[in-house]
Length: 268
Image (cartoon, rainbow, N blue to C red):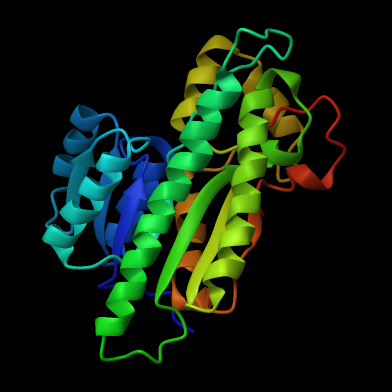
C-alpha cells in the first residue's frame, strides 16, 4: 500500500497554528493540495503566504456557522476542483469549574469540537460521494478519508477539563458512528487521540505553569513531549491508501501515557 497523498486535495481546519498548521505544511510537502481553514484569517493567510506554494490556499471563517462551511467547500472546489481528505484539526480547550452552574464551557466546546466538525464532515462526505459518481475510476477501495483530532482527555478524569474531556469523548464516538455509516460508501473516518504534543494550546499552558513540562515528561513512558510533525505523519498514514482497511479507530499518539495509572495525571 502507498503512503502517498500526492495530487490529493485536503481541507485542514485549525490550520493557523500548532498541530493543524503542521499537518497542512506536511501534506503540502508530500504533494497534496491543501485548503488551510481557521477563524483567525489574518494569521492563517500569513502562514499560507509563508508556505509560498500554489498548493496552499487559505479560508478564514467561523466553522460553527453553516454558511461558512458551505463557503469553505465552495472555495476549495474553486481552487482545486475536488476534496479527497478532510482533517478536522480545529480544537478549543476551556478550563472548567464543574460546580459553576452559570458556566457554559461544556456547551461551547460541544459546539466547537463536536457539532462544527460533524456539520463539516457531513458536507464533505456528500461531496466525496458526488465526486465518486463522476470519477471514471469507481473501483478504488477508498473514495475519501476523514481524520479527526481528539485527545486522551476523553478517558482521563480531570475535573478542571470536564468540558474538553466530554467533547473529546463525544468526538470519538462520532468518529466510530460515522465510520460505520460511511463504510458502505468507501469513506473512512478515524481519529487521532493526542497526548502531550507541542501545540499552541500547550505552549500557552506552559507559559503559566512552569513545572508542567517536567510533570508531563515524567508521566509519559517515552519520556518526552511529541512534536507536531509526528502527529502530521500519523495523519498522512490515516489519509493515505496505506490505511485502506482502517476505519472507526481512535489512534492514541501519546508516548504510552494511556498505558499507565491515570491518577493525578494531566491530559492535554
